[in-house]
Length: 237
Image (tube, rainbow, N blue to C red; front, side, top):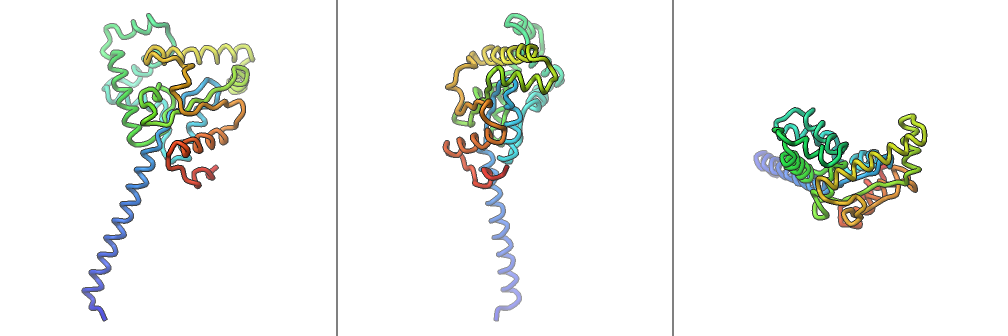
């Protein structure tokens, strides 16, 4: 029969082994989660933001949208309101006024882009679903699964009309305006045409699918691309 000291040693070893096993499992889990980096660009009214948030829940990572601007402001040590105004200026003005915004400003265009890239890269190391901001262009295919959600003008306008309580014509004009602003944003900051399909790994027409179905398509696409997508993730609706 083993003495008390031997049993105690064995028990301590067992505890240490259990801790090591738990820590290894946690590291593996974190490594898997860190590989879940998805960028979601979307047309206005395509339900892309909703898809991104549901996808983030299924993957167990955070959805990153306006909080990206807060992080940019924190890193640049400037008021977040300035970054938000700058972001809106880039989205909602022509080229010359947009360029003029940075003249004699302490927060320049280059500084904005520098911190935006840093924030997006930091998210990619931790894992996340990044909504907009040209993140698919910053990260590229080596660091993210790049998704674009689109829809026809008629269908997207009908969704916006219902959501915002607008008449059909006003909704159509709004969809065209916002999509145009987003296209300008990409062109001005990255020199890329939004119509270029080669910068995405998967493009989904939301006219034909519900939100849950689109999330399923993305997860299955990620699995085919080599991501560790479990059956539990696919079944968790």
